[in-house]
Image (cartoon, rainbow, N blue to C red; front, side, top):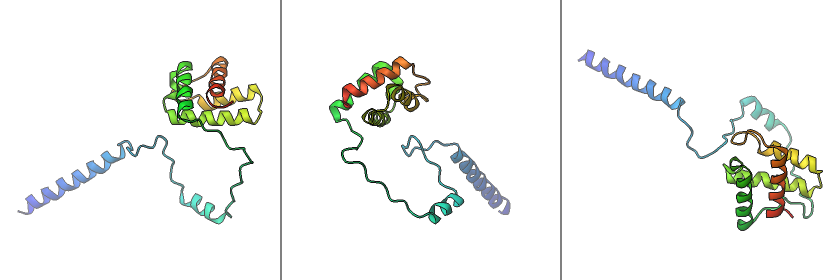
Length: 147
């Protein structure tokens, strides 16, 4: 009887270890595309010891424009035509377009706006954009909602 009990305990412990190790290799199904790492204890202490900064008020009429549903559809269609990878995650593509629109509204130079397009959209599903494609993205953003 003792041997049988010992085998059950060893078997249970083995299953526990296998399950624990297996859970380390599972993907996170929480739906978050980009999980942010939890801050370390040191970072948490640093944040708590700093005085809170008050958010600055946006300038009058200076908010970043948001496309309505019809404008969003036109924007996504135009970006997909330029490079399908630009809209692999449509919400992210729209957020990036809003930031480009902010650059346009801030009267940043054409070269700067195009360079920022490349910085915002390159990587992942779009390894690189040509200068021509960056210009096409700016045109798509202007014609869809940022005029």
